[in-house]
Length: 85
Image (cartoon, rainbow, N blue to C red; front, top):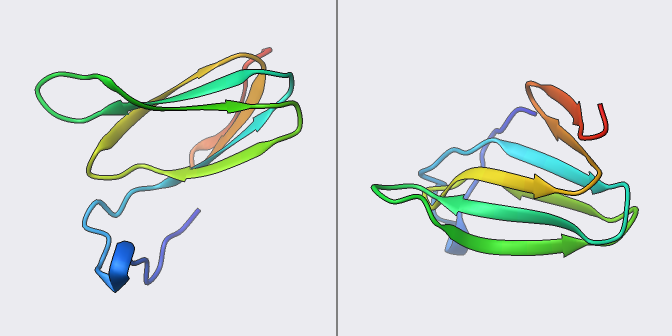
């Protein structure tokens, strides 16, 4: 997933230049949890997806990692991960 000409809020350049990822829920109640950057890693955002729902997200200055709980397909520029495998 290549990024070109991305901007942050209010038209400012996206300084993180983060990669996008996609999570598609294969069951009800899949949790996607964003983890912070910095000295201490903390949870900062949680989404709950129902079966068939898709979340498109981006790594940012604040998000360095994502935890996925439940059966889902995760798509990144590095490949596709199926949590059932």
